[in-house]
Image (cartoon, rainbow, N blue to C red):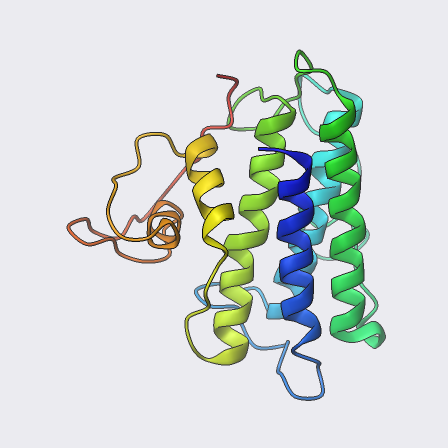
Amino acid sequence: MEPDDVRHAAQWFATELRGRPESGFDYDQPARGLEWSCWYTAEHVADNQLAYALQLAGRLEDGYLPLTPPGEGPNLLQVDRAAGAEGLARTLEAMAQLLAGQVQLLPATARAWHPDGMSDAGGFAAMGVCEVVIHAWDVLSALDDEVADLPEDLCEGVLARLFPGTPEVGTFQDRLLWQTGREELAGYGRLTSWRWDPTVR
């Protein structure tokens, strides 16, 4: 996937967050299907953009950078609760710009480590977009108490890059939610575990 895909995903989710200010929505409730709160899940999305940008910037080949999270949980960053949903949105957009910038700058030959396999810039872009859209679904579905709609073009791009061989059943959103263990797919049971494939190809 491309740098603009990362930007598009972040801007889409940021707009959705801005439309759900804390004054009217409960960000402390669990995100759909997760133990994490909606707030922490949205922080996690921004954190992933930063982590992937750092992996690419360092071209690390043997693990993650040895950074220590500042608080509970694995996130490297935390957003000031006083900043509200607008603060979450701004942070997400900024971190996504960092990832998009690295994807844009690095040559096609650049590689970096991920637990699921060595990947290239396009693979990290796809993982960044996937983190945005699937966790946006978790957050928005909980905040609105109804299943959220995702951008089909982003779902399609993520499936093509990270989930080759996905059954051609339902919408691209249906397929992505199935591949990430969130929903059933017609004719297929719900996955109890899942893994993407970011390796170079």
